[in-house]
Image (cartoon, rainbow, N blue to C red; front, side, top):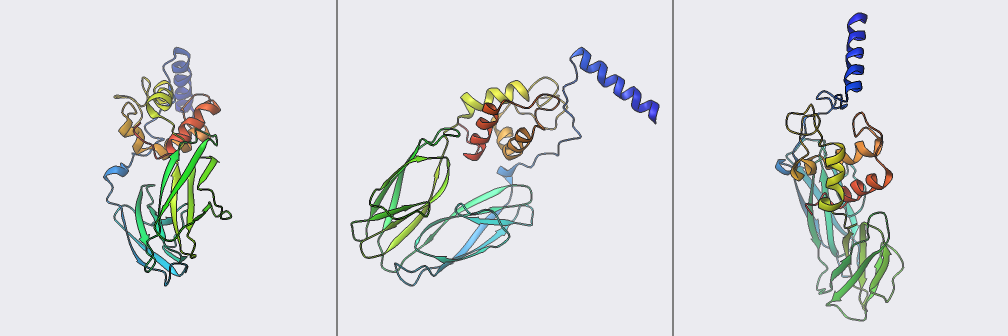
Amino acid sequence: MISKNLKTIASIMLWVSLGVYTGCSSNDEPQPVDCKTSTLAVSSTSTNPTSCAATDGSISATATGGEGPYQFALNAQPYAAASNYTGLGAGVYELKVKDSNGCERTKSVTVNAPGSTLAASFSLVDSGCKTTNGTVTVNATGGTGPYTYSFNNGAATASAVFANVAAGTYPVKVIDNTGCSTTQSVKVLSGTKYSTQVKSIIDTNCAITGCHVAGGAAPITWTTIENVQSRAADIKAKTQSGEMPKGGPKLPQAQLDLIACWVDDGALNN
């Protein structure tokens, strides 16, 4: 057994000296789960608050399909096993579910206030990757003006424009002159582009001969964006930890940031 292992090590050293060994292995990566074709789904029931200023509404979530156990999140809250949310005012909420394969589904849930016509829409400016150049502009309608606005649970202000915002998901609350309110979750993107900023990193370090290409040792090719999207979260985690690229140095921080920003934006085909 020792002799066999020594022969194996010697062979690998020879491959490295010849520039053949890429560090890719079909045994160290699980077969990918295509979340786009997953049967995972999320449904919900909700109760409305008793008045336009009350915060006694609720949302209950149920997941089906995919691979349990499931975790749930409301707006920007972290994922957890709990699926019931109480103490809610009127607004539009983003309900999310994630299964054990890392697949996610999102549903918009509206909690209505009795008799209120208050509503809000938003204009968003991208933040840039790891910068705070984002802007959120709120457009309130209905209810009784003038309005005040709260961004990310901050103090209410008369200004409907919030600048110097980093990429992320934030609650925005609009309060009218009678005390009625509505809350919505807005997602500010970094605006990182796959086609011009991320693809070249993947092509240079991973989609290379013998690795994540057709006929390579890895179980999935990353020459198409659809395949990259199907493993986006895993790519982010493994590049950040230094596990990828296999057999090579850790990527420069600027490239790690671009990958993370693109994945956090939703791994868009852009």
